[in-house]
Length: 141
Image (cartoon, rainbow, N blue to C red; front, side):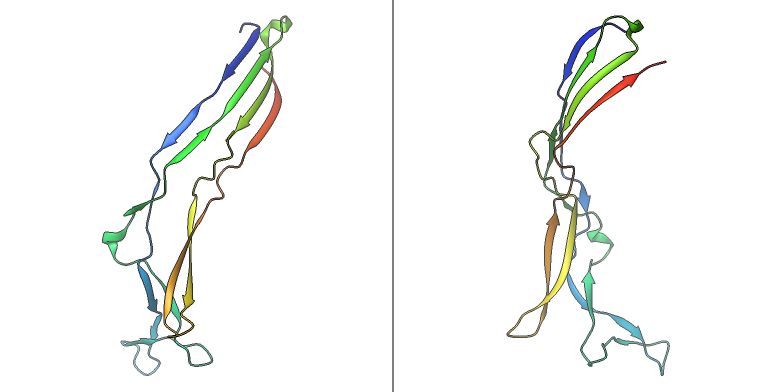
């Protein structure tokens, strides 16, 4: 290993990862206590219907995609002379531009205040890697 300084800046670009988007809401079915072969709508203790997110059928599996993914990382490595080239000192920054890449979709069921009908609210969670500066020392033996 030679002494000196090395610099790198890998850029990552990718099409959005596939995910299964919900297509609506539906009433949660439960077994009828009088006839276990039959399903009936589930209700809460107040008698209101219990709703859940409906992902639709198998044809919907992974049919949507997140927005494209992009990230730029940088690294500066210094190898001092002597010591048989076993030491490295480095500075690194991950996600230099602090780009918020979509990582997950959260769904919540809301109710229209006028009609009382349920509807689905979708929020993309952009909690991917934040800007992350690091430094370190590496010794090879």
